[in-house]
Length: 388
Image 1: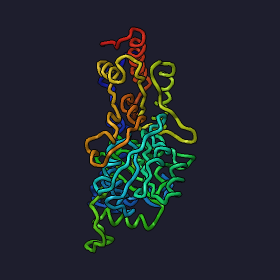
Image 2: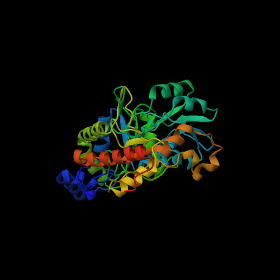
Image 3: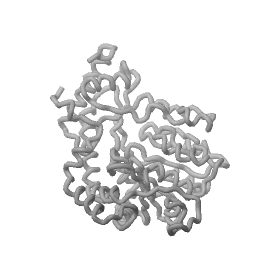
Image 4: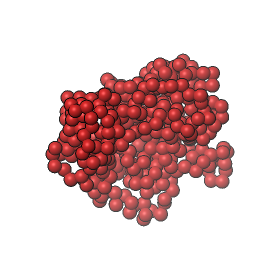
């Protein structure tokens, strides 16, 4: 295997990314500190306008985090306890958790095994008279199959809320994700493709009335201070994070290109490696590779977990997103009974995310893929996983 210092390998290299734009970031922070306006204000407003322009939607509202964005979407659309929303079973917990917190029942649908995103046929099978919304998640950086989902929603008079936390900048048929539904939701968690240096999120819409209601609900239900018309929450993107995000937004296209080039290198280096399925790139979509997620076939001795242990011994970090599908989590037991969802359950047993970030080098990737090849080829040849 190629020689690479194990200390250099990280799932996400936020420090390296920061150092490349350090002067810009520090100047932006200094501007906020000198202004004395830390909550809302002109810097937040400027970021919201620039974000909306980049995504091609009318309105963007900065909020506290991506989970708040989802909760605000449900509240703004008037969903109530007892209503149902259809969500993928294979995603981060926040998508369903934000609904459950409001007494809304998350109904779990299965996924397309190629893209890991909502399977429209599974969604249709789970519609009921109580269904009020479909929540596609653009998982790992690739758009869900939106055309049939939007058609289902229109036919059954349902809302569409896009969870775009992992796919900012991705496109579906030439249009950026997060802008198709009634409301789109973003997260600026530090490891995201557009990451803050703390928590942050945004809600997107093209509807002026929804934007006004979102703004009120995120500000204690008030249009103006002390005049509260609705029961809301306190969820605001602070000016320091907005200033940082304004700088990083200007670099986002370059960041996306770096991720896509890294994904291309992984594809080439692992192209003929047996026992693996590499990420699928669906037609008419751009993949922004928040994660580069492979599948390890069950016939590989030791399976996914054995490969992960072996890579850790070589100083290579990996992650499993996600080891338990949502319908099997104890947190959602009271929202059942839940059907078996074979594709989500199979993905949870097989997926492994490799290091993916803007600072990833070809040398590092060759070291990673050499180690993967060594494990898989040895395991298949000998019938047992290598031990070191």
